[in-house]
Structures are given as structure tokens and as C-alpha cells.
Amino acid sequence: MVLVARRGDLLSVLAAELIRRNGIEVHCFQADLADVGQRLQLAAALEEKSLVPDCLINNAGVGDYGTFADAEWTRVENMLRLNMEGLTHLIHLFLPKMIERSSGVVVNVSSIASLVPMPDLAIYAATKAYVSSFSEALRIELREQNIAVLSVCPGPVHTGFGKAAARTEGEQIKGVREWFCIPKEQCVAESIRAMDLDRARIFPGLKVALVAAGISLVPLALIRLIMANRPRRV
Image 1 (cartoon, rainbow, N blue to C red):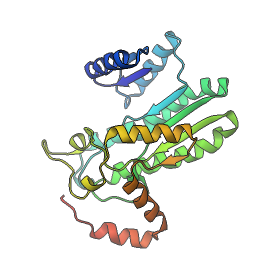
Image 2: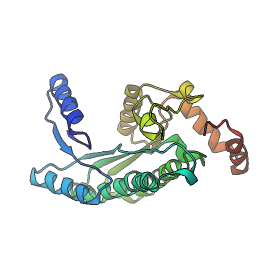
Image 3: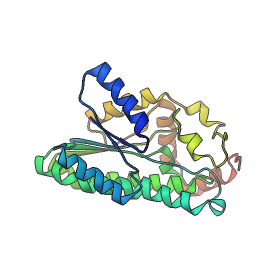
Image 4: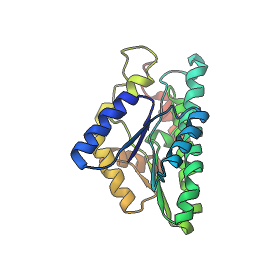
């Protein structure tokens, strides 16, 4: 298993736990995947160690909670680079080896936010709409190469996302979202099951799946009306 993140200390702790519990080989690489240079260094480091991913999981992503007009451009730019550019570039870097072997899996973590325009999370939702659309098209392109592509579209999950997305320290994105929250373990388990079943897209959690199904039946004009009148804390 190859783990990649910005925080090397946390990676080391996770690697030790994985080795202890599962007895597997784990490699850790500290990298900021929003940076093109560090993505290229990661690919070179993997090649040097003869590590060829057969399953690429693009889980790195950030949000920014607040109105677009008040956003710091550096946060917006980082979100665009990580959520879209980084994900796309990593697939482009590792896909040739999968095609060469005629096997592999790409798992892109999107969001239920990809289905609707979301005030106060406008850029985040738009980046996830890109991820879902790109995943669907890529899945069709790679079908003949025997490479599967899965788009995971969770709702709220208890992670550090809300804290990182908040613009004020200590602020949390709460409200009705707590009703939809599922444990991260459930999100992972359902995603792995979907990957094993060669699903194209999954919305982990029954409540989130039902909401997603409902959204698909609602016309855009009504979605605009609902989003314009939903409670806002900004």
C-alpha cells in the first residue's frame, strides 16, 4: 500500500497501524498534491522503487465555506488545483501502466454536492461536479482496457473536512447535515463493495442515496428555488 499526504507524521502513524493489524507492506510519501512539481516527484519516486499502482484512490480534497465574493483567492486556487487538477494529473501519470497491464481501478472521491449548485460552497460543489463527470467519461473510455472507474459521492462524513473548510477557527459546518452523517468506516466499506461490484457511482449511506435519487427527479428550476431559500449561516 502507498500512502500520500502533506502530513508525514500522521502517515507514519497510520502506516504503523496498518502493518500491525494487517501485516502488509506500506510505503509513505509526503507530498502536497496541489503542487505539480510534487506530483511529478511522487511519480518518479514510485517508479524508482518499482511501485506500480493497480488501484488509484483520489481522496485528497479541500473545501471553502463562505460566499465566493469574500473568498481568499489563494484558498480558491488551491481548491481548484487539488480537487480537479491534482486528481486529473495523477490519473494521467499512472494510467499508462494500467493500460499496459490491461487491468486496474481508479476511485475518485466526489461528493453529493456535485449534483446541485451550492451557495456558500459554490467552488467546492463545482469541482466535485467536474470529478463526477470526468469519472463517468473516463469509465467509458477505459472499458475496453479492462480498467474500472468508480465515483464515490458521500454526503457528510465525520472527518477533518469541516474544520479545514471553515474560514474562522473553531467554526464547524453543522445544521441538518448531522442527520445525514455516516461514520467514515461505513463510507469506505460501501465504496469497496461498489468497487468489487464494478459500479460506476455510489452514494454511501441510505439517507444520502435516497436524497441523490430524489435530486435526479427534480427539475433544475425547482433546485434553484430550493437552494435559494435553504437556511444559510453565512
